[in-house]
Every structure is written in C-alpha cells, then in structure tokens.
Amino acid sequence: MMDTGKTDNILTLMAKAISVAFHPLFMPLYGIVIIFSTPTLFGYLPFSVKRLLFLIIMINNVFLPISLLPYLRYRNHITSWTIDNRRERMLPLFITTILYAATSYIIIRYPVPAFIKTFIFGVFIISLSVTTLNMWWKISIHSTAAGALAALVIVLSFKMNSPLLWPLLIVIVSAGLILSSRLKLNVHNPAEVWLGFFLGFFGLGLVMWFF
Image 1: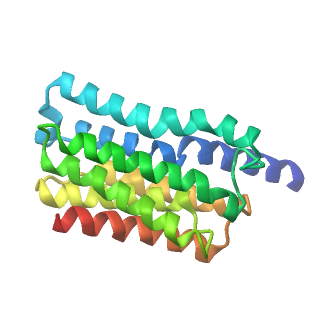
Image 2: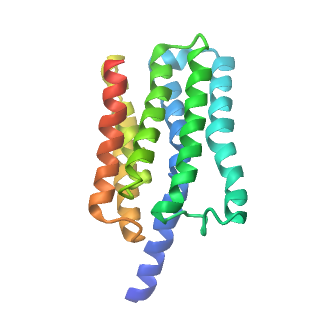
C-alpha cells in the first residue's frame, strides 16, 4: 500500500500540473476554441478568421505577458514565477489588463460576430475587476478563469439555442479540478477560491448575456 507521504506528493504534483495546464493566461484561448468548435454558426467561420483571432489572442494575451516575466523577475518586481504574493501580483495584473484592453480594441474593429467581441470585452472587464480587488484581497485568478469558462458555455448554449452538454460537462469537471488544486497547494483559502469563481462566472456571464 502506498504510504501517505508519497500519496500527498503525487497529489501535489497533480495539483501543480493542473494549475499550469489551466493557467488564467490560457483562458481566452480555451474560450475562443470552445466558441469555434461548438455546433453553432461560429463553427462555420472561415478558417482565416479563426486563425487571425487565435493569433491575436495568442500574441497579446499569452506570449507578451509570459515574455515579460523574466524582466519582472530580473528587476525584482516579482520574487517567484508563480507570483503568489498579493502585492507582487499588482504590476503583472495591470499589464495583463492593458493587453486585454488592446486585444478588445483590435477585435472590435474586425468584422466578426458580436458574441466574440463581447467575450473578449468581458474578459477585459474581469481582468480589470481582479486587478482592482487585488488591492485588498488575493482572490484566485485560476478560479476566476474557471468560472468565466463555465459562464461562456452556458451563455453560448442559451444564445445559440444549442445544448452543449459535453462542453458544459468538461468545463464543470475542469473547474472542480482547478479549485481543488488551488486549495491543495495552499495558495488560497476557500473564500478566495469561491470569490474568484463567482466573479468569473457572474462577471463574464452578465456581460455576455446583456451585451
């Protein structure tokens, strides 16, 4: 029988792997993939449009933030790659929010469905909200991203009148794994995890439902 210490080490490694695989920076990419792959009208967008949107988000909201981390570490703005300190998160969050604003501005100018524009704008609103709340409380950004993806699938299902059972099941299971992983790693308490989830869920959900 496996001893308790070894089991705990395995669970910790799994929690770290889940945290990396579902890093908040990847959330817009996962969201746009969900939109493109669901059996709705978005699944029939020209490949060139899908590729352009994917590249814009990949460069602005994944590559640029990650590429800035070594500089922030070199300048001692952050002391670890995971940026667990609340105060150290302020500058990366501010930069990320500015980049989301730029992405939203770029995509709004392109002739793409309004739902996609609203999704990107909603992500910007969530990022701005997280940055503001971080001045007082270190909420879980991973959980915020998980909640936002769950809201995206639900709103997409209602607005497109298309039951998205499998995507919904996947995001719910993923959300459970993400929230559990953040608690397992002791980087957040339950209140911070749940606040993050509900901020992402209701933040993106309300923006996409009403706009």
